[in-house]
Image (cartoon, rainbow, N blue to C red; front, side, top):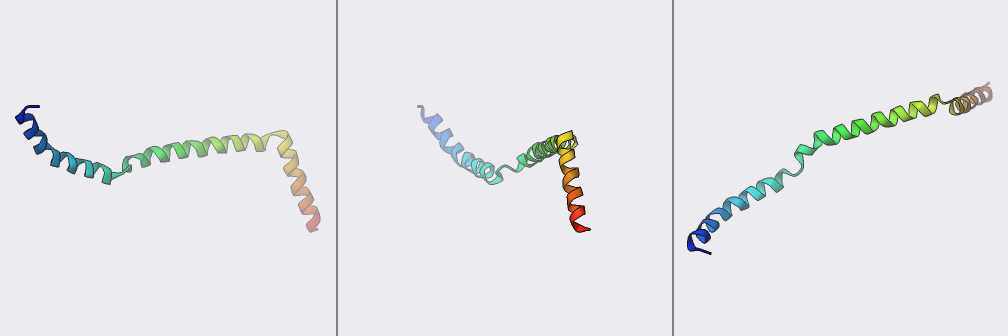
Length: 75
C-alpha cells in the first residue's frame, strides 16, 4: 500500500466509526410501516377465512344447535 492510501484510510476511519454508530443506534425504525402492513393483511385474510367457515352449512347448523340448546337450558 502506498503511504497516501494508508494516511487517507486512517483519516476516514473515525468518520466510518461514527456513521456505523449512527446506523446501529437507529435500529429498525423504518420497518414499523411494513410490519403494520403485513399484520393488517394477515388479520384481514384471517377474518375472511373465518367468515367463510362460519357461513358454511355445517358450522352454521352446529352454532344454531348450540345456541338453541343454551337457550333451552336457561328457560
